[in-house]
Image 1 (cartoon, rainbow, N blue to C red):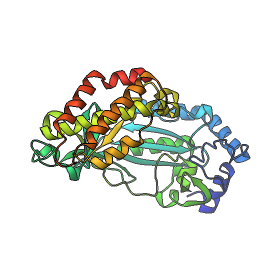
Image 2: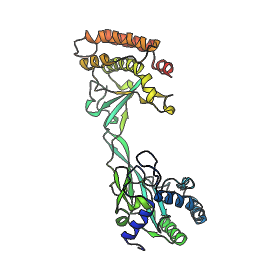
Image 3: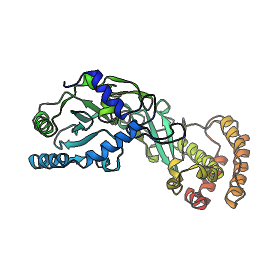
Length: 368
């Protein structure tokens, strides 16, 4: 390499102020805790803007596209003219015929004469689901441990025991079918910018006194981009959440969901005005996306009574007054139930009438 670790750190400190943590050392956000922009940050912004004007970068992309016309090339550095994000040129080349949807990533630093090449892969796996969701007016989530013959008609259905998940994997060890393309592009980078590859054992070196988010910054973070977790292994595969159609549920579970839906709809009506005030403006028009509930498939009398007792109207609109009246009716039905077995027929009938006379859409429209 052309530089020692100490020399690379000296370059980093020219563009990243020491002792300042934050979500993005490439973009020094201004707030009361940070004060005015630093000299280092101003230098980095200028470097980004200057890099965006470098014709070598644009010419190199054109040559790559001409050499590989069937491989889509995506410019990931369109933000540079604004002086924000990253300390490198970034672009990707998709390998559409690869079975694991591989993408080759290239980062070329304009702060130091180095580049990085790696493969980003999406690998499909089959794993047991971590939980389930039932769209029943609102989305009810169900833990995997709760699923059984009380909830579903066919608990042995294979679709309840396996689900497709995708693992994202970053690797510097390129596959044989990736190397011809990557080698040709690497040669273009080297001949265009005089750069050389920065190996992972150097790039993952921690930079003292520079923090990104809640983690220490590496040379890769500061000389290229923080959009990758360079020093951590690929995260473990997360199981999928499987959606259950209501037609696959037992009649007993449907009665439980009917009562819970009425219960949560009352709660939504009483809390929505206050909730909307706290939402960012773009999300106020569709608050339903925030409304979901969890259940183990059973009604819990004491829990429902406690939740009903805590429900309070935030205004005196016709909708909230109506919801308060419905709350008292449901509260009386729950209080008269012994809490054992499935919900009483009278409670289910009341919930069904309530939902039919006051659908969720009308609640959301009245609150918007």
